[in-house]
Structure formats: structure tokens, C-alpha cells
Amino acid sequence: MKGHMKSKRTKSTKRYSKLLIKLRSWGNYIDEAYQLESMLAKKPARLQIEFVGSVEIPPDSALLMRSIILKRSRQTRIVANARSSLQGATSLIWLLADTRLIREDARLHFRPAGPFIADNAPTGWKDRSVFDNDDMEEEDYVRVLQAINEFLPVKELAGRPIELSVLKEFGLIDNEDVDGLLATAFGRAKERREKPRTSTKKELMKETSQ
Image (cartoon, rainbow, N blue to C red; front, top):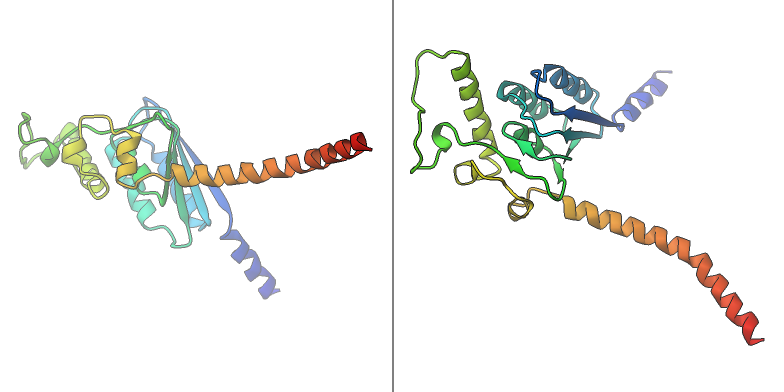
């Protein structure tokens, strides 16, 4: 009986999960963060996160999701699929995935802030001993940019749309690999469909020659 229960637990780690994050103009995405944590606690073999919409996830919520993702089991592979362009802190969640997919005409975009402002650009950034809510959010946003900087040169890219070609240059997307797998799968399916047609055509030619 105990052995049977163990086998069930082993199977549970092989499940695939999917989290859809609808980027909306309201809310703090805390519910999505706890949903993400709950899914990862089950140690699925793969968790696919899909982004739809163009609104930015607040920096604090993105940092919370980042902390959850970094603590995930090594057994879990995360696939992030951006079905829309990604703004600001949302880009960080996408970048943290093991496999990254993005719509062909979608882009990443994050504004400059803190030390990630070009040297020739005016800036109001300065050290403060007291923070109000806006300052706290800006500090969180700078931390988001610091994390993004591990994948992309933020200072050079902030403030302009990051196209698919740039993401390819930094080796950050897996669209081509997936397209190749799909092409192979469709090619095999096409071969299977055409085989009976070819044999039928040969039979017809044989009948005509007789």
C-alpha cells in the first residue's frame, strides 16, 4: 500500500501546469503570484506562463514573482509565452523562464530609471533617506532593472522598443527551436497523410497500363 502511494506522488511531479496572466490596467497581481506559488509547490515537470495584454505588472508584484520562481524545484521547467508586447517589470518574469517564446511582432519595453539612465540624459534620481509611496515604487522598479540587466544591457536598451532581432542576438528566445519542432511534426503528419494517396496513384497507373 505504501509503495502504491509513493508511485502516485512520483506521477504528480510529471504533470504540466499552465498559468495565464491577463495584463490589465488595475490590480496588483498578488493573486497571480500566490497562484504561481501554489502551482510550483506541486513540482510540475513544466509550468507554462502565458502573458496577454500590454499593461505592466507593478514592480513589487514582479519582484515577488521573481522570488517565487527562483525558489522553484529543479524538476520544474518554466516556459514563458508572450502573446503580447511586454512592458517594464513584466519583462523580468518572462526573462526568468527556462524557455522563452514571443509573438513575432511583439516587443519588450522598459523605461530608464536610477543608474540605468543614459549619461547624457537629464535625471532626477538621487539618494533619499525618506521615501513616499511613489519613491518606494521607483526603488522597486530600479531593482527590477537590476535583475533585467543580468539578461540585457538595460542602460543601452531602456527607453526604446526591443525587437525580436535583438532578443535573438542575445540568445533569449526559443521561437526557432519550437518552430523547427512544429515543422518536423507537421512534416511527419503530412508524410503519413500522403502515403495512402501515393499508393492509390500507383495502383491507378498500373490499372491504366494494363
